[in-house]
Length: 153
Image (cartoon, rainbow, N blue to C red; front, side, top):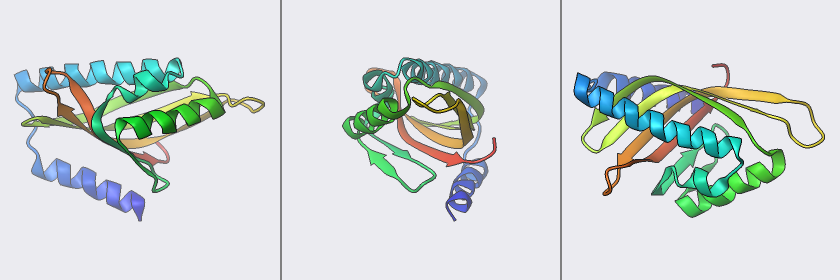
């Protein structure tokens, strides 16, 4: 059911949003690459504060397990607990498509996390994602909504 909902979101975005112009597309892609690099670095350093700063103050994370975390402070707490359990994470984010509509960028792609929990063997998990980026007053872009769909990439 959750997969169907996420698939529906991706299908709706594909049908409704028009890809950005070349100039907008380049700016949007550069903003996403910068934000995703900060996300990946925070995961590698198990840095909950830096990770949370990639999100809008009112940002939300929606996981495949039905969990919803809302607000930068709650995101910091949740990812901090995650890092405490498993340590640093090698994250990959592969953008598939982007659309820019006014002060939002909609991104789809594939994600994977590789980590070694204390006392356990190395593991890799992954899936697909839909991320909505919001333009901030200072001109930067932060994640407003991050929807993770676990499963095969």
